[in-house]
Image (cartoon, rainbow, N blue to C red; front, side):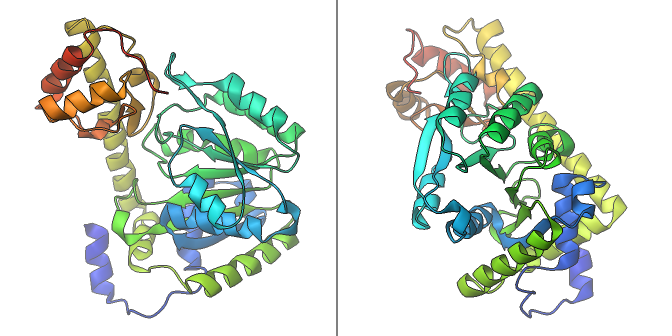
Length: 358
């Protein structure tokens, strides 16, 4: 609200923004993602351009890769279950997608053996889509040690990481949620990072996103910038200005930035508290059958409950609790007034052992 008031007082015009986005906004955005004191950013090896939120930045990144000779014939690897847009986004630009198992329903955690096996089977130079935090749809994230092992495995096969950073700050702190990305960047990977401010700023409809490319050399970064500038110009000319101006106002002011980070920490804590409350209501209070550990082992907005499609249908029909038929819930939808109702309904529909679909 404060940023909106400041922007209104500035009486900014409605002219087009620079094709690649306002340089000050892009610098601020990059320092949120890579760290305020990032040596990578100071090296000049990072190219940042504004895109149409997270989806648009992934599309732009995929398009860029498809037009780059080094990726001719390369495939994009996506861990499943996955955000439903990955496959069509890559197929749209002519890149074939290979899927592998990311989530283990029996543990509610990452199936890390399957992830490592995928890196072994992939051809050199293949693209790996990696969600940096708050995995959508499972909430199952890599641990720091798993990120370390994955970096070693991908480096050995010369695999190319494309990071989807849609939920930074909702799993833990801004820095903790960027651990994997910063690790890969500091280990010398060339990579793409797709950043969205839809969730952590609540600017869903303003479509505020940035695509960052990390190159081996500074002169390569300048060529990457020119290529991305052309792709943006040819496809959508420039990105929306209003939302990026709001983000820039907040990130440029120490007080407003601290207020934002405090609010973000409050949101993150609420999500974590909702998980603890639902798990306690089910396991401790109601002695629910089944394994509900996925509630606590996941991060961010989403997690999978151990439900089959029939149980999900019954929840909707009898108790007016609606979710995807694979059992994915949005933890943010829980509150003190509906927690008991949700837990009671879950106990009623899981009276017999469930058969997870995933």
